[in-house]
Structures are given as structure tokens and as C-alpha cells.
Length: 252
Image (cartoon, rainbow, N blue to C red; front, top):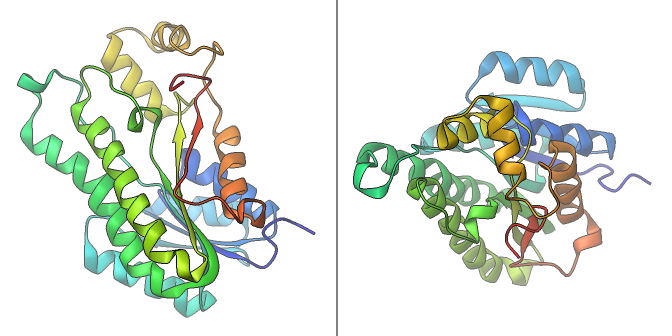
């Protein structure tokens, strides 16, 4: 039997990158998915690709509580419940030393990652079936430090705090809550960060980041999706309050 047979998953940031790769794998493993994001055209294309009988979408900025509440209501009206929540929406913020980092960008970066994860959990938890799974996409830099990306690093560390609190609060319902920590992953999102951080063309920037990864290459979105599948499935029934790194050894 498929590992997510008849389960229902909500995925924010589901229209591209890691979110869409995760949706593809979840559907292949028997799940129905509710994609939430800010790009209506990409969401529609993703639903078409995945199949209208197995996917729906809602447009919502995760920092807007009313929009999150309405999106969750859309999913509940269609599917009745959720078994898996993947809080995956994110932005990169600025690349600058702290003394030059724009304060408004810092605030927005924390809002999308920390407030966003909080709001997604706040409004989905009442609809998550006992024994379900909640996954927050953090980053390798949610476990380590690096110069020039204070907003992103602070936000990704903050998500771990949200996760650990939720894991304790939901343990009595056997709902596991974990963070996943991708290393540099081959997406346009990551390309942008790397080019701004190194001031190099995309191919040279990627090579510079490869040199920082002990296993010597970027992770793929499909590899991250496999980690999502493990945390979403009953295979991880005793895994909670855990930080799962898929980073080629960067955080070790």
C-alpha cells in the first residue's frame, strides 16, 4: 500500500520548489493535497499537473491571519480534515551585514517564517487528525550561523522554537511535529541567494556553495521530498521534536 494512502496534506509554498516536489511525491504515495501559496497561476498549473481529483489550491499570504483562516476553511470544506501539515512558505530576505540590514526586510523575513508557521499551525491544528504529522521547513542555517543573512537565519532558528512548543502541546494527541533542514537545494530561490551572497554568476555561485558542502553537491528537491515523506508517514510514528537535516553534512 502507498505510504500516504487516503491521507490529506496541506502544503504552504506548494506552487514551486520543495513544496511542489513534496506535493508530487505525496500524491504518488496516495495522498490528496491542498496547496496554499501566493502565485495563483502557478498554483493552478500545479493542480492541473497533480490532477483535479487529488489536489486543490488556495491563495493566501501566510502572514495574513484572515487569509490563512480562509484557506484552511477551504481545505476543510473539501476534505473534512488534515492528516499532514507542511508549513513550507518562505522568503530569503536581504544579504547584508547586520549594520546595513534593512529593518523592514528583517521584520518581513521573520513574519513570513515565524508568524507564518505560527498562523498555519494555529488554524490547522483543530482540524489535524490525532496521530497526524506537522512539518515545518527550516534550513541548514536554522542550526548553524553564517554572515550576511541575519533575517533568514534568525527566522529559521525561530521556527525550531515554534516546532518544539507545538510538539509538546500536541503529544497527547500523538501528533508529531518536526522541522526539516535542507542544505543548499537546486531551486531558483536558492540560486538567487547564492548569486547575491557571492556576487557571482549562477554557475560559479553554485560551485562556491558546493565547496562548502562536505558531500560536494547541492541537494535536489526530490531528496527533500523524500525526507518530508518519511516525516509525514507512519514510518516516523515515534519521531517528534526532531530537526531532520538533509544538507550533505553542512550542519555536522
